[in-house]
Image (cartoon, rainbow, N blue to C red; front, side):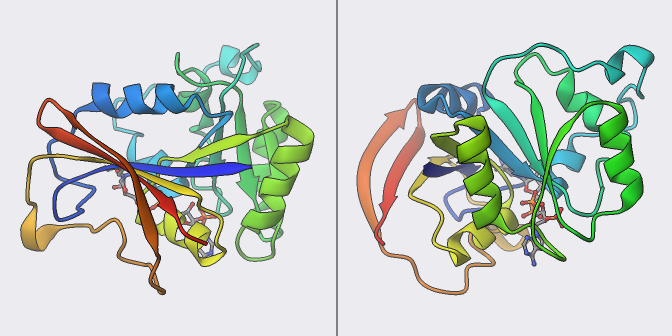
Length: 211
Ligand SMILES: NC(=O)c1ccc[n+]([C@@H]2O[C@H](COP(=O)([O-])OP(=O)(O)OC[C@H]3O[C@@H](n4cnc5c(N)ncnc54)[C@H](OP(=O)(O)O)[C@@H]3O)[C@@H](O)[C@H]2O)c1
């Protein structure tokens, strides 16, 4: 399975509080056309706002949707009562949630009652290697894109699971308030530049991870 990490970031690699061109960001996602589009629970929850509609009866039904699957890593059940927000998105395929052995029972019951797919691996946190192997075998996943904050990416790097890095660099320096994309990376990573493209002042960089 090929795993690509994709982010928008400022020149100093801040991923929040920066000007982003979402059209360009998602154009790149579409170019990759991944079977799985994955993000972490912090990112997932950051889109739930005060005016996000709460669940209605029809949200219990699993819509018939094609790929890409949208996979949310959420072993703590942060998205309990809010998964319908993603299920109803016009861009999402079916939702799959990655959970662990310590995931609260109430979250598992919430998902079962609404027919959400979930994959349970690992003890405290998700075992990403095992979860990916299940995604490959059960859902025939060949390409997986992670579009998340720095944390989830770093756990994937820890297990050498990322093959390619795609970054859309905004013409901006965030400075001291940066939430830096690579803030949790513990070991250096060798990269090989594959392509670089000027997209109207934004620079799209694609690197292969040297393993
Ligand atoms: N600029 C961009 O391209 C971009 C893209 C996406 C998000 N963002 C921003 O990034 C911010 C959130 O980023 P984030 O890095 O804090 O969070 P995140 O990547 O969304 O979520 C962190 C994930 O790491 C997992 N995790 C935590 N500890 C772990 C451990 N010890 N072992 C294995 N997995 C572990 C968590 O799993 P559990 O849930 O199972 O605990 C969680 O799903 C938000 O502000 C969002 O808006 C920016």
